[in-house]
Every structure is written in C-alpha cells, then in structure tokens.
Image (cartoon, rainbow, N blue to C red; front, side):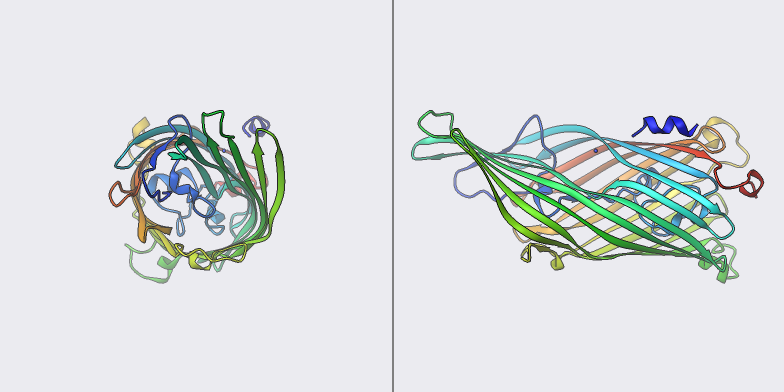
Length: 418
C-alpha cells in the first residue's frame, strides 16, 4: 500500500493623518502576520488540533510533530498527511474583508523498531510560521491621489528527524533534529493612476535557513502512584533550542524605467528558545483529559542584530477532552473517537502597547477505516484581536482533515499485537 503514498506529496499598521485603511478584497490573510516571522504554527496533529492542545504529554498510536517523545507508543509504521481549509473575516471600525484558502499542514512518518523499548523513528515536513497579508492605503501628495499597497508572503518550514525511547517503562524521551528554512517577500507598491507621476515597486526578499534541536520527555507518573484514578497520568515537557537563522535581505527597486537589485543586509535572525509543559490522564479507558502550555520570550528576538521594541513574552494554553470508542457499542458511531477543546493565546508582539490575544474552541473525531488506517477531522472557530482601539479583529473558521496510513514494516505481527 505504501506505493500509493508517493502520490500524496502549503498587523496592524498604524496609519496617521487622513489615510484610509482597507485590506485587499481578493487576496491576503491576517494583517497581524506582518510581524517578525509571521503567525506561528502550533499544529502538531489533527488529533491534538481538535482538542485545542499541542500534545506535550499525550501519547498513543498517532504521530505528534511537537513532542518527539510522544511517538514511543506507536504500534505500526504510520504515515500521516494533514490538510486545512480556512475562512478568515478581518474587520476594523472602517471596513471588513473575507478570504479563504487551503494548505497542507504537514506530512509525518513514524517507524517503530522496538515497541518494548519505545524505539521509534520520526520523520516529517511541517510548517513553522506563515506570512500572508495585503494592506492598501489611499492617500494623496501634491494634490495627486495614490494607492499604496503593502503585502507579504512566505514563512518558515522545517524538516525534522527524531528518535524516541522508553526508559524503565516509565520515562519516554525523544530527541529531534530540525532543519528550518524559508523565505519572506515584502512588497510596497505605489500606484498613482496619473501619468504625471511614476509608479514604483519596492520588493524585499529575505532568505534564511538553520538547524536546531528539540527534546521531549513524557513521564508516566501514574505508575508511581497507587491511585486507580491516576494510574494513567502523564506529565510532559518539551524544550526547543533557540537558533540563529542565517539570513540575507535583498531589495529590488522597480520603476517604469529601471530595475535595481541591492543586497541590503546579510546576517542572522535570532529565534528564542521555548518551553512547554503538559499533563494528561486517561480515566478508565473511557475518556482522556489533556492540558498544556508553551512559553517563549520574544524580547530575545533579534532582526539582524536589532531588538524589536514591541516584542515580548508569548504563551499559548490549551485544554482538551477525548472520548474513546465504546467497548460495548460496535456501531459506526460507537467505534469513533470524539474530541473537543479550547485554547488561549497571547501573541509575541503588541500593537500600540496592547496585547494581541486569541481564543478559540475546537472539535473533531477519528473514524477507523481498518486496523491500521483511519481518518481524522477537526473544526476550529477562533478570534484574534478586536475592533476597538484602532486594532483589527480576525475571525477564523478552519476545517482540517488527516489521513493516517499504517503498515507493519520492522515489527513481526505477533509483536505488534501484544
């Protein structure tokens, strides 16, 4: 079956004076993605997505691209491909804009070599951040009106390679190497719609790449207690090292008469390290409750050696519940797994001195297709920012789907079925 898998391979600007602000009606995403390296991707799997969490302490027969220790419980080789289609409505006290688009959320592979020792290899290609905005300003100079459009696209992606291992049947550890790379394109286009003036386009392209390490730990703490209610309690931790992206910034200046390309900067963009803590408990094999938080100090961020005044500490906290398949009801609905959760997020930047907060609710389900194959679905509704105080309010509706293909590669069937 694996041969078929080869066929499955994606701000607010403060305007002063009498300028009129609006977002382009046909393209662009969240204006907040203009900051730093863009909107951070906290997606680790469709399972955790539907629960509103990262999966810091959540194990099981699934691939979690966030904690390299979480794959230690894989029962078979698993390939997971995930997709998203999202709708975004952005509004302020002047205008409203609606856009939609789809993208691939990641492709991940988990290969268990020894279930007893939790020795599992993890491979993946996943997005790390996204920049996608377009903002138009209508203004005038010398009696001539002009439209000025700011737009940006790109972001960071990562290729990861990691291993998990189980120590003393209580401690799951994981270590992962990540190669991060990407490109950011920023455009500033001035259109006078007047032959007396020359239109101009300033294009800035930033390319970067660098490696970093991620380490994870999940302690099966319930095995240390005599409590039946807590016998499946897990405590998780993830550390991601900070890293300096080797970066180059080129400026391309285009007018009606010339095109000039200039190397503006060459140096490093420093990304701070992050920490995540989580706790999970399985209650009698009927449902799972999991919560986690990630912390990151973006005041340590450096853009070619410069600090960013409005960057500070960020966090994201989530809580989710998973209702496990019924042991007695063998109907279609009884065999499914159901999920619900929510999250709260404080962005790594402020606008006009105000924190940018996001909150959301999510739900989803897993539908088993066969012993090793299944489908995951998730839905998200979240709100970022607000329309008061000159800010922008983003409302997101996202539909996600994951396809999980499983086979036995390096395990004997009788070992897998233990």
